[in-house]
Length: 76
Image (cartoon, rainbow, N blue to C red):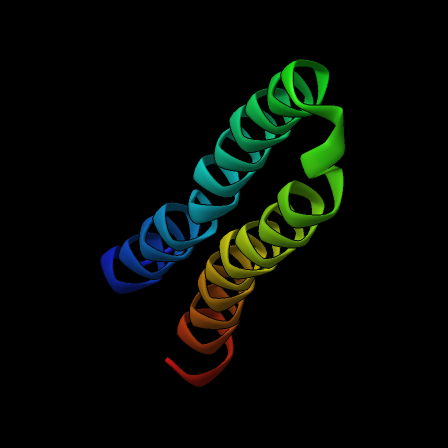
């Protein structure tokens, strides 16, 4: 394994770590949304729609990290 190959593997690994941040963020957001619904059940619709939008954006960053990792591995 050459040095360049090792650096590519390290770069791809770091890029995939965005999934870790997305998972933590979605977990915290879901926790807070559950607490908010418990406190104000009548606001369930607004809370759920905001939660789904936030989760989609967090998941998009994880997918971007995966795409960057694949590009690093396959192109370079």
